[in-house]
Amino acid sequence: MTAALSSCAYREMETNTANLAKIRVGMDREQVLKIMGPPVSGETYCSDKVYYYYTNQRWMDGLVTRDECTPIAFDDYGKVIGWGPAFHTGVYDTSRIK
Image (cartoon, one colour):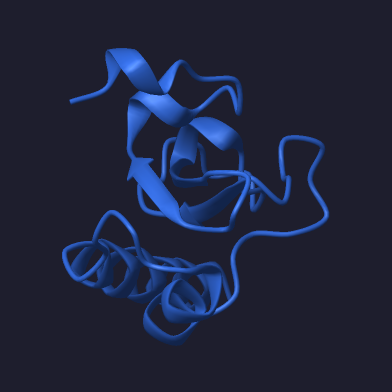
């Protein structure tokens, strides 16, 4: 059973990582959902401004923690402003992001 779960997790991480390459600044939430599918939900770090996708297994505990995910951040209009480590907090200064 553990091997099956690990295999599913690996496939999800691989798919999410490949799909992140298709994300562009300015896309809206619907475009992101069409490419990426539903984000991680039900965790305290989830929000409407930042979608988290499982991309990097660090722990073999069956949980999906924020440090195992890549965030995609949206502005107040629902448009992508960026993704990756700079957006993990959900509080970001867009003037500092290139």
